[in-house]
Length: 146
Image (tube, rainbow, N blue to C red; front, top):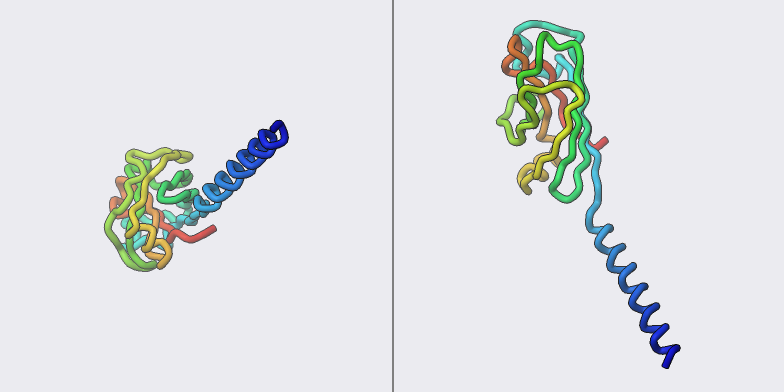
């Protein structure tokens, strides 16, 4: 009788571990990055500032994106930052507002739609940071696995 109880306990623990491993395997994390520069901005900057740069880094788990945005040497304070949908060299609509106004080092989370996740796989998402002098965007970077 005691052996049966011990075996049932062992089977229960092993089952729980297997279920936990299967759950974790289903939640794969992907790192997204974008190096932001003035050269990638479309349309081109109104006020040229070749020193402006930044980095977007996010971790995607399921449909939840945890992100951090850093930047430096902008022409003024960052008025907003977004994830847009368009191919490299094209301008696109905002799909995920990140911050506004923004400071370098900001973090946040966003829940992405199936359409946005599909666009990422096709290299159709980019991050840009806006300033008063460059309202359409001062620095930009296409998102990629990184």
